[in-house]
Length: 466
Image 1: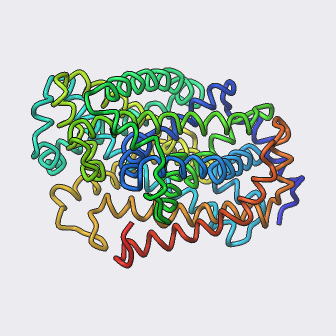
Image 2 (image 1 turned 45 degrees about the vertical axis):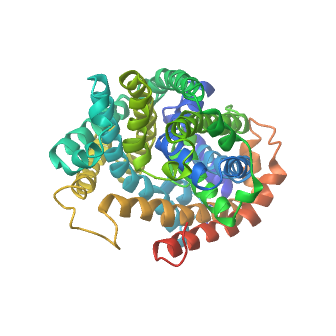
């Protein structure tokens, strides 16, 4: 194993040579942009509705402040300590096989997520475009979404527009691309979220939805509430997918890691709560309180919500604002995935940033096209009974991410040591929650990760229902 002081010296040299964020605000907005995506605006509300509303929200907040905090601190500190993206970060502490595996699984996850995530981003592009054209009535039709995604050519064009937009930001660099876009997009996203949420909660009959979402009812609690909230936290906070190592490697040594982590936690959760207030009360008002409609999963955003917007009388305006907000959120998340892939290829293959980003674009276009065609001309292709896009989603979120997070805990416990993490954090932070970090990372996180992995696989095989 490489001596820890040697690793620190190499990291210091690497950090001097790397482009960094201009300051804490640029980093916070970039990480928040990574975290705030489809997971907050679409996935969080339907999971909250499915698993008890207020009780799900309460469990999620507890997990976010403990488990989520520990994971963000770990990944960010390791990224800044080593000055590397995931593969290099793990490799800085030795050459054992488990370290190599841990680094590569963290690096491969974003490479698999980016293509299919961009396909869904392409769907958002289509809806945003159609609302701006004044097509609210057509979008509210039962057959529109199915007809669109089965039209492989149109869906492919929308997918390509989305991922090329992310590519252009990455080519511009960390400061002029990621940071500059985040500083514009994130405030705009918050403004649109507040406007939409206020409009939603003031609809007749919406207050019952607000009550269901915000007030915990312990009768609705089950072990699956915890499992679902834990899985959502990974998806929402961009944990265990290499992003926070990469963004952490761009942090200056005087950046307050703990303060930044706390701000990202609340920023991300605030957007998720706003999303819940946008969607749950509106659907409550539209359906008269039918919870089953909210549990519709992916169809909630692309089938149910257009009907809700159309019924409000201002379908084109509200639909345009909502889907523009979703598009901005999806784009910032895609940018972070793209950046992680680019940084890994650049570091490990010794290629320049532009060529590395072109490689990522090429691979993403191939894998993304397979996901597009999976709902169209390749709809006959199924993997374990799932369409191509659904399979990639299951593989990354339900299998690889829990495994990746387990190896993060292992890296901290066996290779770096808690004292090593504490020293890095305390270079710029007081590390107020250090004791909690220790308990969660060593004892609680590994246990829950195994539960998530086992329950996800069991659910897919039909042994349990999640």
